[in-house]
Image 1 (cartoon, helix red, strand yellow):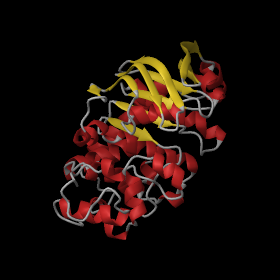
Image 2 (spheres, helix red, strand yellow; image 1 turned 120 degrees about the vertical axis):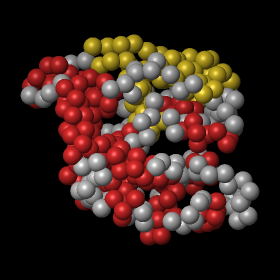
Image 3 (cartoon, helix red, strand yellow; image 1 turned 180 degrees about the vertical axis):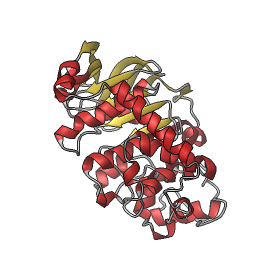
Image 4 (cartoon, one colour; image 1 turned 90 degrees about the vertical axis):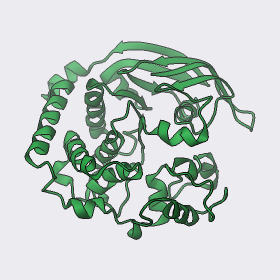
Length: 337
């Protein structure tokens, strides 16, 4: 469950980003969040990810009171979330399998579980044939499917999708939302931020409109999807997802050790071949290409590493990516491996 009670956010510059916002999203809901640039959508996302704190009010996500959440508990909290980035954030030196498996490796999931879970999720998003492909071999829609699989692989209670159709062809946007709808049908709560009103009108459902830091509309509307889907001769989302789940389970039953993927190589992720930017991007830090101003608004990289670096000898508040990686290596069992 997501709940904001009388939440306001005022930045140090004096800008009021959110003004006395109250909102409740129940488990299993699918909600679109819409609004113009600067309306407060990004601020709301940062609140829900515990990247920033509310100036006033109470924020509760998946049973965690974020106002009282200690810094050391942030990684634990974030494991209950999945996040889909607009710009994919895939690691170019890793295959589809490796990109998704990396999420589970960061939290020390058992290898046996990784070998079962990753192929299952890949099949769920319809990319079994692309398991060993690299990001530059994928289309925009396929990259976003990988990003969704990565968000889903840890079986989160809530997936937040930030403009997930922003960097793909318009005709693929409907396909991506259909996929998210299908995932929602299986019980995962979805919060999707978008500026594409055609998508919202097409699918309908709960629409939350933020304007100048306030919620001005929060209603369930009827979409036009039934008529359009009939014209497209498509399956209903629930039927399509049920078929995908059946196929994923069939693949797992047939090859429990994932015989079609070289899992020994895939599990031993090539961290030594990754740049610092690759690793920082993978764990939610500042991606390459962000301006200095944007970088300051991103969460501190150390806050996204599920290892206590506070006593590491070679890390400081102003540590570079390379220094953070060295500290992570020092504090992680097995070192660089």
